Amino acid sequence: MKTVLQLLFFGMQLILPVCVTLYKPNAIHSPLLKEKGEINTSAVLGLSGTGLYNLQGAYALSDHTGILMDGMVHHRSIKSADNSVERLTLFSVEAGAGYFNTFGDKRTGIFQCYAGSGFGHSSDKIDNSYNTYPEASASAINLFIQPGVAYSGKSSSVAFDLRANYVYLYHVNAYLYDRFEFWNTESRLYTDATLYFMNLEPAVTLKAGRGKLKGFLQLGLTIPTLNARSFFIINTETLLAVPLIKLSAGVSYTFGKKIISD
Image (cartoon, rainbow, N blue to C red):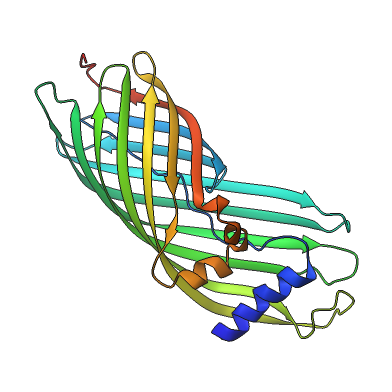
């Protein structure tokens, strides 16, 4: 089944002038919680290497423990020169819990470590006039652990987080064409294939602004490690390397936080 799946996505690339995408990571959530009752929220737009729309929320259960929840939605529609149209849709949600602690004379330093899991679904479909609607889809479960350190002052913060993210894709369904000529319309549907891989995702997150509302900018990388070949199979545009660079921007707002002077 693994060989079939590899041929499947290779075949789709030869038939169609588009890339196959069944997985995109979300923007890294760096909560920067400091005290019990604090709520951190962010709305983030993925510019490169991540899903397009990201919503993030975290809540401090105590002065040292917190929970987080994230959601991501990604959609694109691309028309090619041959009038074929690729329609890609992805969504994912995840939740986790972790430990945080402040340090330094003014408690501006933060150590944080969160772990959790999530679920997602993706569909990549190509409509054209000469093939019977090639389509690939999959569901996914992920497990992650994310330690990090940060400086958080009154008007700005900077955080470095390193996420280890294990992703298991199941119900991978797609059509396999016996020959790769564009006029061939004979295909077979393969269902319930599985793939897995693990990525390391280092990220630097900058927040700046007045009071509790701040601008958000994040730069990071996606580094395929365990079973990296499977990651590239279901995200062929990353073979160009640029999509492995993650860039996102947005806004962040914190409720219930005591503003601490720099």
